[in-house]
Picture (cartoon, rainbow over the protein chains, first blue to last red):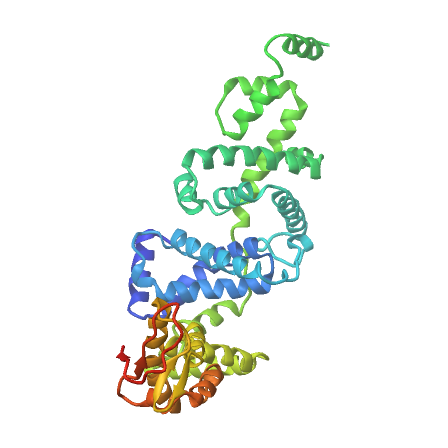
Length: 193
Length: 226
């Protein structure tokens, strides 16, 4: 959806247009839910957090300024997840759902079964490799490589200098590649095939 | 043979090129010399493959389908949510909810007692224990002789203090009806009852003065008002 379409949709949402809001939710929900799942790792909690993020966004639509709704929504979603994680620190952790158990459909589009299996297997490897990173590097990789935020945006979100984010991002990318090779040394063959 | 030779030379000169090559690769640097290194270094080729996979796969992990009921659930909580209640009703509901939560607390009685004690303390303050002790001392410092009062201690600065405290004691005794329930003034009340009636009038007590280091005089004419 083009930026101007987004702006027009959000304008209609501000006027209480339910259809416009439904379109916005349908278009952005997989990104929002994906981010919640990466932070919270429990599908149930991720669903609740994603809903909470939309409720907050709906209440704060008047404050949204700018053309691109998705980064604003994702920033808001991250704040909801961090609030939840802070609250969880005071109580025992929720059931640890493994992302690589095949229950979570990591790609929405239908594919040939073999290709889908291979992709989900690779995604599982990636999840394991990401989990092996340090906290800050993991978040930087998630925000940069998965969510697609720019270095200045990540620096603002994490409260660290842009240079730090840049160098950490490069280091984390290298570390991730090495972990991937450790987990599956034959990965190169998969690429050359 | 050739690769071994180059590796030996690099080891004895500039060091391993793999580290530099990998640093360039993670920065996505477009380095023509990299291709030459990759052609001969299997480890760095594997590293490059892993980076290629990261570049291809990570962005696809951004979107995860939350399930078919998700949109409806969000709409239920946003556009389809009932209109907010008026302020009074919201406050009323919040109090009812708070009371419900509080009533389930096992220590509610203790907590209410604590809060009540704190409120009483803030409103009325703690009884002045030092004052009670001074009153007790003052009440034992007097003896009666006919209709006059006599201090049982020599005349000095402490005695003046005793006299002043005795006047306060008279005022306090008149207020005892108000504070009779307090355990802390129980001792005081006992002693006040023993004091002569003159102390409980509005008039200043008639005090027979005695000089320091002198036995108390029996003369009723030598009186002093404090």
